[in-house]
Image (cartoon, rainbow, N blue to C red; front, side, top):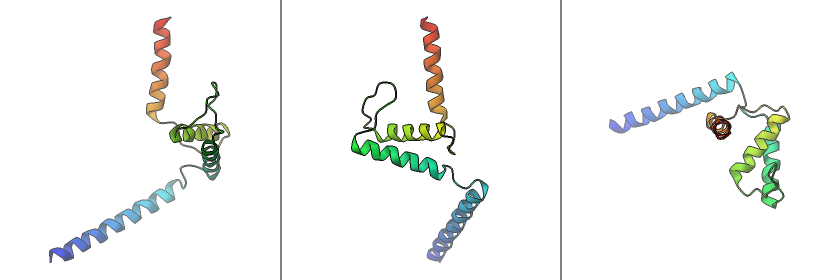
Length: 104
């Protein structure tokens, strides 16, 4: 009997998961546009071949995370559908700007 309950619980959880996925699909569709995905793929390809450079300094980018960030940034500038930057990224930017004011 316990074994039957486990099976039924597993089936219920699977049903719930599929409903959640379909709800998300109905609400907004893709989080990132196909164009943004292509932009990130292009940047990752450049990183793999060692030709990806950072913005102002021009140093070679070797980090996957940094490459993805560069790709998403370029996609945003091009007007592609990309979610807003994370709150942690915005907080560090604010902290830096405040520290410059205090030093001056």
